[in-house]
Length: 239
Image (tube, rainbow, N blue to C red; front, side, top):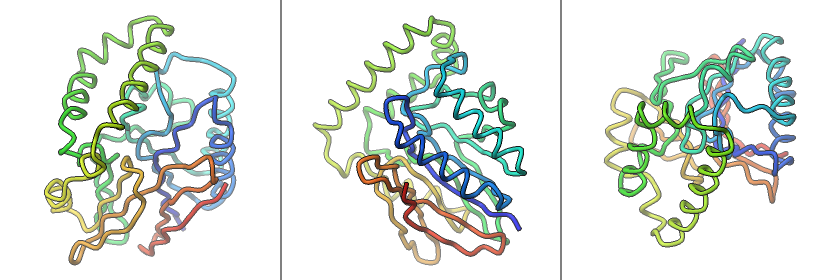
């Protein structure tokens, strides 16, 4: 029977090996469970293009190939940190790139999947930046620049983002309830990450399930498993 597994906000990088080891442990745990793995954005802490090559990425690709060869499948949605990740990288392990909004049917129930940043409509400055940086022309132009330039640009964006967060109210960086209500109209469940506020919210007869960010300091993250029969298991994954 198929197992549906949902994770987000791993923020993997070469500088944080514990997160990478935790991801490998997850793949090993679910390798023989006929798993459909859905990664809902911010898989990597920064992604400067599918043309980058280094040892730690090769190790990740190797583990993903083993996972796929065991009969599992990987689905990816772009986040605000890895929106430049494309099908070229996913082809290494026969992964599937999903659109920013994806409707999934499990046991006659509809699940809306997205990263979650589009729901934070009160963060106007971020939404403006997102509209600019993810414009097809801008993104295509950036991918043609040298790797070192993109790396420098990504580092600058992260620093500016961290500085901006210090001056924003926490409520501004959370979801807007009107945006949530509009998003869940055509589904029974809304699953997303991005906010780093893991919880299950009851919305009358529907639910909003917020996946947790992977916390290196304590080695845990809240993830969601759904059986083929539609049974939910929202739990703390320790690594």
